[in-house]
Image 1: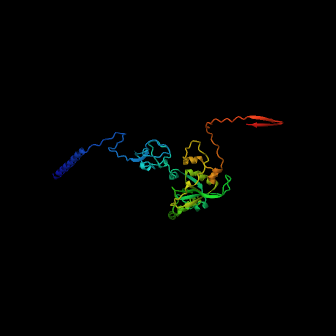
Image 2 (image 1 turned 120 degrees about the vertical axis):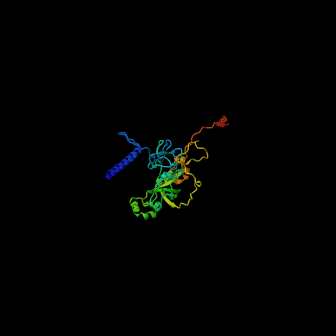
Image 3 (image 1 turned 90 degrees about the horizontal axis):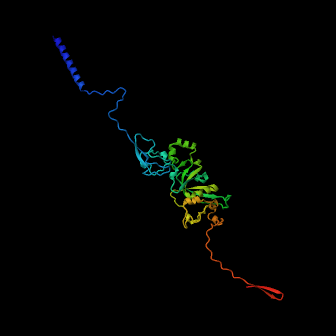
Length: 336
């Protein structure tokens, strides 16, 4: 009897457990079954990260200086390597290639180099250098030098005296050998800290001792003087202190004559030629060597014929009368 009661109790407990489990299963929502061959989509999509990139707001020509109207910020789903994330980083810079509208800007598309180190009206000119004529190779990029011009008087281009004079004052050195103002040579402390790199630079020929050229910032109107002086004379670079700003007063000396003269009537009186016009007119070596004195000894150019002014009618010469006088065998002619 007791065993029967125990079995009945166990069955009752099992039935209650099954009933509770069935009730809980009935409260769980059924999951949707995806159709065969279909891909289940997530109920919520993760937000896509945006990246700000500077792009061209319109078509931009090569050699154009960028303004705020030329560029804009665009939000792209991926980051652009070597691009710009701020418009201020490109304003005022000049494009090296043409860009279509909407194209991202890269550093390689913008001008860089020594050209950006020049001031308005200057040109970068390379001259050959040797140790005795370049302060013993102690010139460094960024230094200021005076350029002296020496003639030995033995040139076949013109009869000139042996002379030395200052050709250019306080010219800035943009590059000397392999070093430049953008890639300066290592300092003494850097060479001590990196002896291996210094030894590699010496083996590669990057030392100033091996320099063969110097690049100077030269005013446009002085480029022809520098090139003529280098071709027919000898240049010497004299290193000067950067705080020494003294330069000669060119107004105290007569201007050198030009190889080409302006056409008659094209230049107004008392109006000076612009530097670009003087550079176009050119310079002769004999004028550079002899100064304004060469102009005084040079043959004068043929005058351009002009319309002749009307002449006053010439006064007719008085008519002359001739009379012959006979005195015996003598005949005498008298004019009155």
